[in-house]
Image (tube, rainbow, N blue to C red):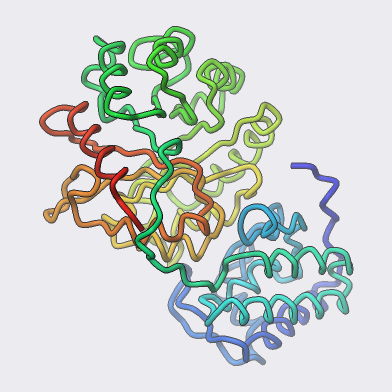
Length: 407
C-alpha cells in the first residue's frame, strides 16, 4: 500500500477518546437497529452505558464489537468504493469501520450513505479526519453497492474467460500424465487452472517445469495454491513460482487446530507479505474451509482475518461449498464484506452433504452469482474434492453446467 494516503490517528486523552466513541455510537443508534454480529447476539445497550459495556464485553485489545484494525483502510468495495482513507482509531479500541458496521445490515443503500455522511460530519468536527478524507469516504459509500439487493435476472452468464478448474480435482492423473490431463481439460473448454503445491513441487514438478505444459494446452494460471510455510519463510520462491506460471494470486489455507490468536497472527503476516507481493504484482488470498466459521466467545476466525487484513493487499478465495457446509450463507458474507472476494471456489453439495459436480447439487449459484459484482469476483474456479467417475469427467461436467447457468 502507498502509505502516503494514511495519516496517523489524532492523539487524545483516554477519557476524551472514550467519550468520542460513546458519542458516535449514540449519534448513529437511531438510524438502524444493531445487528446480531459475529461477536455476539446482544442488542445495542443504552447510550449512556455504551463505553463501559464495550470495555466489559471485549477486553483491552479489541473493544468495539466488530474488530476492524486501524492498519486497514475504509473500504466498501472495489474501485470507487475504496476510499483509500485510513481506518482511524477513534478511541476505546474502536475504529471508523467498527462504528459503521455496527449498524449493518442496512435497510437500503440510502440509509447506508446517510449514516456515513452523518458520521463523517461528526468526525470532522472532532478533528479525526480532514475535509478531503470525508469527501473520499462519502464518495466511496455512494459508489458502493452496500444496501443494494441484487436480483436474479436469468440473463447473465459467467464469462468464459473467468472460468477455471482447481487442479486438485484431477490430482490423480496430474503427476503421471499432466499433458494428457491438461489437453482433456482444454478440450472440454477450460481456459484457466489453479495448481496447488509448494515451492518447486506442483504434482511432482517444479513450477518452471509444469508451467510450459499448462501453457502448451492453451490454459492460463491466474492463481496458485502454496503452503503457509513457504509464504512465511520462502517468499522469494513463492514470487518466482507465481511468475513462472504468470499467476496474479497466491493463496493459502489454514488449520482446524487454530485459535483466535493464530488468526490474528496470520492477519498480521498476510499484511506484511501482502505488501511485498503487491510490489511484485501479486495478491495473497486466503482460502476457507468450514472451521474458520466456528465461533470462540462469539468471535469467528474468519472475521478476524477479514477485518484485520488490508483490503488492498489481501483477498479472500471463498469456497462456496465449505461455507455452505457449516450453514454460512455466501450472500450474507458478501454483503458483510463487499469487494473482498476476488476468487470463488465453485463447488456443489449433494443432498447428503457430500461433493457434487457444479450444477448437480443443492447450492443456489444463481443467487450467489447475482452478487458477483458486490463480491468483486475475478475468477470462478470449479472443483470437486471427490470426483466421480474420474477427475476429468467430473471437471468437464462442471464446466458445461457452469457455462449453461444463467443468473
